Length: 536
Image (cartoon, rainbow, N blue to C red; front, side, top):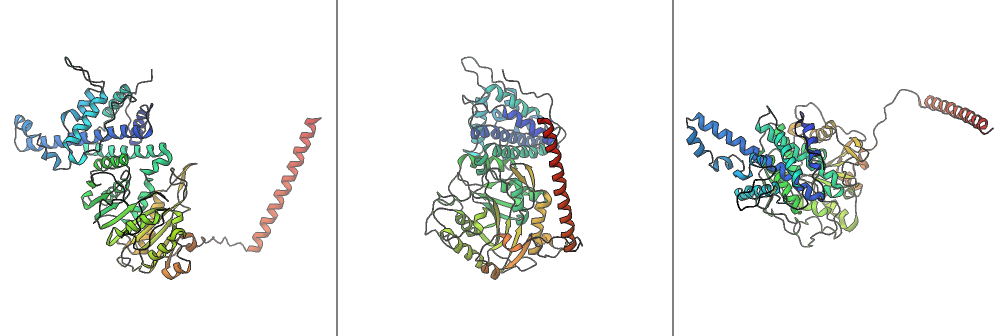
């Protein structure tokens, strides 16, 4: 018999909570494949979120009505007005889908006369149906897989017990829901690492997303991601807004995603973070059927799949304004699709494979030259290796701007190159991450260069830094055959002069080296002598 999940010793910190829930969830893995297992866990987190949000709003209504002088009987009649919930951005949760009901029946329901008892998996499937039925925006979004034969119903009940017991005493319901959002993101990251290469289809490392967001500063208007995965770009945008004391309502979110399961994850992720995202009515191929054909976005952030060979290519597509992308690689198709979606004054940040910066195959070099000459490229950033556990391909960031004269400094006819390959730290042998100060260094360099509002008043003026950044006129890029690799332009970092004359340094180092040679020979002689004694 497998051990029961212990729920008596509750975690006291956010890290402990996330780790505890992950370990408990991992007990459910069993015979499930990774993608189904992911749907089960994330579905439970989402159901916990919508139920907590519903309970919070219900209590608010009760307090408001009581303050207005209504009695308990009147409150009981009025508290179930659906509009009082949906009008505040809260999903309506029918009784049988509320977490308290599920927690009370975590071991299954008692069978009524002439009826079969329901397992906890059946109850959760019913709850998913009820929530989708009551909220049209969630139609076809939530998983209904909890009563399948390969899901251990006892462990599922124990996991539900743990989720129910992990309350945030003293934090308040709103804070609790925010932390559930953190749990959802944490689980997405853990699943991405567990799935390896496939994990990259739905998850972009948070620090890479933060670089895009901190550079672009998407604080208003329409924000778009044409291959939105699980919605990480939008969630990070919401966090950026919160850190600058702005509401998520300051932006309108638009996205598209090809994979059905990933599209469902994105819908749930946005809902948990209180973002009303327009992810269209279903999943779909951005190239074959653009689901936002008339969109002109103020900010675009994307991490398209790298170097895909099998894509819906049409030579007559009006998006190919700067050249028809090659059949065997969609990199420049993604770039041109994104540019076609930019509103006047809009800006974009795109994660790309390093090869995109210098490739000349299939006419890509000509397309790149056209993009440069159109003065659309504002900044190129070379990132460190190993940021993506899911791929060993080195990556870079392309930043585009429709109007480079819009800042306090007119940067028309120039491109900023940043070589950030030496930034970051190793998490383990397989993964590198960017520290907060690394992200700030990249973003601040860009903002000072552009004269962005966030950089004004800092007293800092932009200067080229050998080995890190350089502002290059278009003529200089043309002379380099339109290659956009930062290392080609920024040069090598200056070596600090220690004041020792070079002749003296060479003599000193040579003497030290000869001393080490002599010591090595002495030690070798000692070892030979000792070995000779052993052999005797």
